[in-house]
Every structure is written in structure tokens, then in C-alpha cells.
Amino acid sequence: MKILAITNQKGGVGKTTTCVNLAASLASLGQRVLLIDLDPQGNASTGSGVDKAHLKLSIYHVLIGEKSLQEVIVKSEKAGFDIAPSNRELAGAEVELVNELARENRLKVAIAKLNHAYDVVLLDCPPALNLVTVNALTAANAVMIPMQCEYYALEGLSDLVNTIKKVRAHLNPALEIEGLLRTLFDNRNMLAQQVSAQLIDHFGDKVYQTVIPRNIRLAEAPSYGLPVLSYDKSSKGAVAYLELAREIISKQHVNKEKKHG
Ligand code: ATP
Ligand code: MG
Image (tube, rainbow, N blue to C red):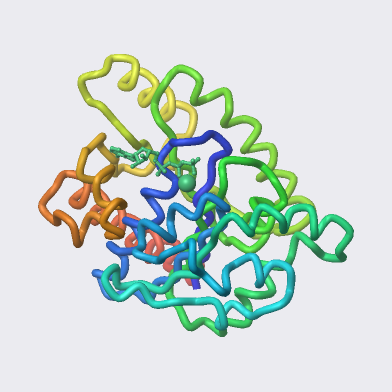
């Protein structure tokens, strides 16, 4: 089971858009996908067609140990994947868990109980390096960092990379950065091209080949509670996320072959 944390403490870089649309794209390619919304903003839930205002159960109840993941998962019929939703209640978990034992491991333990019922689990992280994000990094076996190619993008990256190193040292030795994803990309923008070139210089093949363009359809789809694949499957955004899904699946195959000789 691939458990991919989609994270960047910088806000508005396309984490949630990537989670929802990658989930739908992987599902359309036959993968069994679970999306876990770990942000109290609940945008991944809304964007997958789940009404976050009227949730009885959410990921909050899993993290505080009241419910199992199975009990909070809902099927997003229209989107084609399952989702463990979230809403504002999750903001309280941070405080409530402060004095709990093994508080960083809550999500990992909950996911282990799923018994490999999914091929891929995507974790939509909040824009913060907080306890919920540490839970995601502890549960994950790979990290995807969506980023906008702009001047300050690289600065924030070192804080994130340091957090990942700490989690690897103390909580999750198997954690790997799978890739950096260029999002909201505008090819006509010279600065974006320069930053993109710098990224490739620094991180080499850790930069996904697929680039997600700025595309209005991606911004519109969530207001219908739909991934872009269901909203406008011929849009540039839909095509890009399908390509990303294919790239991730083929990376997985390459890694397996490396491991097994
Ligand atoms: P937060 O840190 O608040 O959780 P985020 O990193 O999850 O934000 P998103 O919510 O995915 O970012 O995107 C921020 C805004 O940009 C949203 O309004 C979204 O619809 C829009 N957006 C994201 N990606 C694209 C894109 N490729 N083209 C056009 N609009 C986009
Ligand atoms: Mg988000």
C-alpha cells in the first residue's frame, strides 16, 4: 500500500487540488484509492463532494482515538474514491493530543488497521508543520511536495526538508521524498521557468516530469464538488493530473523492480 503525504507548509500551492485530482485520476486507472483530509479547512472533503458542515464523524475522531478509520470513511460516488473527511473540529485535535502518549503515531496505527484495502492512500496536509502534519509524515512511506515556481518557493523548502529529516530520524526511517510537483505553472512566466530550472538542478529526478499548468477548470471544479476529470475531462488540468497518475504508477513499478533485483 502506497501512502503518499502531500505536503507543503506554504498555503495555496495546490496541495488539495492535487490530492483530489490525483485521487480521481488514479481511481480512473483502476487503483483503489483512499483520500484522507487532514486539514480543518476541509477543502478536500468539499472538493470530493462531501458536505463537511454536516459530518457526524470525521478524521478528528480517528486522531483522538474514538473511532476507527473504517467508521469515518465515506464513498465519493461521483469522484470514484473513498474519503476520510475533515472539518473545523480537527483544529481541536492539536490541543487535545498534547499530553497523549504516542500522539505522532495515531494516523499510522489507524491506517495499518485498513489491512491493505487500498492501493494508494493520499494524505492532504494542512499548511503548517504541526502535529497533524507530523502524523501524516509518520504514517506515510512517500512525500509529494507541490510547489509554485516563484521566488520564495525554495526558501520554505528547507524547513520542510528539515522536518522530514527529523521525522525520518525519530519516527519513520522509511520515509522518502518521492517528488516535487510544479503546480500552478505558467509557461510564459520567465521567473517560473528559472525557478523550475533551479529545482531540476538541485533535485534532479526528484522533480516529477509532469507539470501542472494553471488552468481555470481546476479552480472551478471544487465548487461543484467534483474532481476536474468529472467536470471537464478534456481540460488541460484533467490531462495533466492523469499524466501525473501514470507517472506515479510507473515510478512504483520501477522502484519494485529495483528492490527485487
Ligand atoms: P492550503 O494551504 O490553504 O490548504 P493548498 O495548498 O491546498 O492550500 P489549493 O487549495 O489546492 O492549495 O489551491 C489554492 C487555490 O488555487 C484554490 O483556489 C485552487 O482552486 C486554485 N488552484 C490550485 N491549483 C490550480 C491550478 N493548477 N490552476 C488554477 N487554479 C488552481
Ligand atoms: Mg489545502
